[in-house]
Length: 393
Ligand code: MG
Image 1: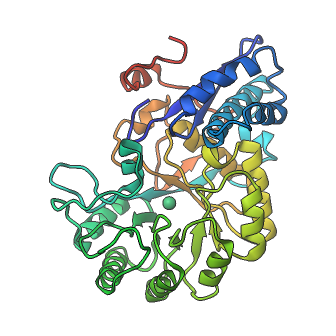
Image 2 (image 1 turned 120 degrees about the horizontal axis):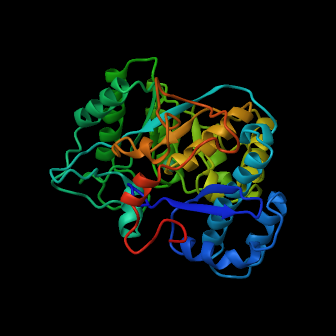
């Protein structure tokens, strides 16, 4: 499907007449990987979910496209687990160990700096999806005023959200060089003023996070995090690149602003190093990108060992989002799931009923078997990526 991202939905069919639904994170080569992996699943027992997830990942582990393969494997595994839930007439959270909560908190990723053409400047995720590059370019037509962010924050609160996030690494003209990881004095002042304005707008009781998309060096990240301490952020996300655990530890030990990272880490291994070193206050693995359902649960359990909460990064359709909600029901140290489609009016209607209707900033955990959702075929067909079909159409 084509929303504000490409939502790659996957359906597995079993000879028991049961189908399973999953979603893979967008990315170059992911759709081709799903197609490629089909032959390795035909004839297999869909109930062997974990073995099949390892199989589809490992059969291509020597290929130079392992990130795409892993995203594909994760989406396939989600669909297998959905099918198993339907086979045993059990919600997915029961397959994951049972329920801690009936509702899972959803936080709104807000976009601001709205330009005259209606695009959301500063929405790096969207820029990545549309252009293949990460950082959005400076748009002289965009409105980067902190007041524009405050307006968007108020709009999200009016929708019932009590937790919101903004991009902080907005591409203003104040940031002289986007490549050297240096925060200019003027840009630091701009960012502090932006956070101050949004905090003043929403008040002290709203959970407020800001994302920096791996942009800065250690010293400047520390200066930024310390400058934001008065505003009591929920978290500051990825002020540093994700690979250097020692740098993250240095940052985290230098500020009381909580540091969140993890959306670009794959499988449990980097989380072992990150958590053992004390490099994050909160982790944010992306379920259909970083891990399959069962691997994600292992990451959550690992984080719980270090008393670290988990707030999944999520840019998916209701399918991936509900999968994260099912995970949230089954994980004690679960914090909230990201919702990145606040401007996509038809997002909830991708699935039938009220399953994807966010009310008062939470989603009810579906009680039906598997994911507990059904696609609204008419809506999906209306938003297919050009040149693609409804599954095998
Ligand atoms: Mg992020």
